[in-house]
Image 1 (cartoon, rainbow, N blue to C red):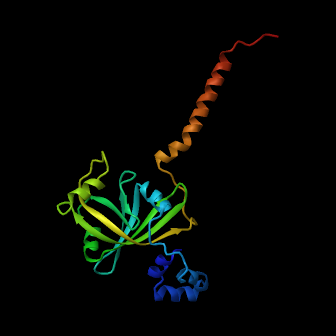
Image 2: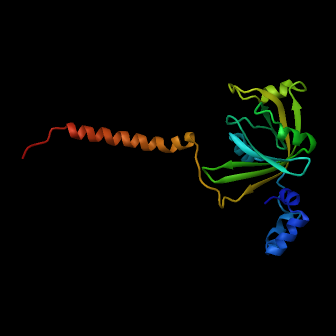
Image 3: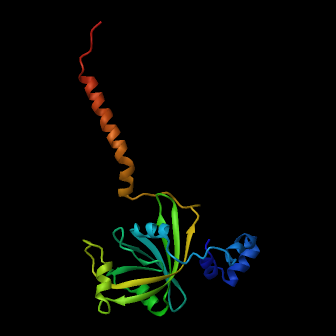
Length: 209
């Protein structure tokens, strides 16, 4: 775990629970000054985030309740602006505006990016700036995925406060139809080859004894 993530996550109540459960000593090292900071997007994080076609995001309401939502789009719809900033075009959905309303009051956001086929998970804590299309249409235009037919209403610009690669334990391995097809294609080719060989053998005249 990176130090920035530990500093934000390990509240007094969390530290007390770690002490009670016997894990405080093993996690104390992540709060040491020499621990890796982990508050900037490196090459590995940039590559991982850039190929996502969706992620889970959590915001907090004025009443203190968390709200978790899945945000999706074509691969690459989430853009890396620099090593501290990511952004995406907020497309019109059911128009409840729960996440948008929460972020207008409390700019904190928590995101989990999932790579189910490879059982990898990246967590992000950040602060959000909502930019209406009338305020900066050029920014929104740059975030709009080419050929994606959806109505963008605003830009969501996220300043990264902390990043953390989570362990793969308990992550189920799942694949989309597109990902599964990449695995099945060689098997289909092999099956077609074997069928052709079998058909050729069936049509080859047999020598009589």
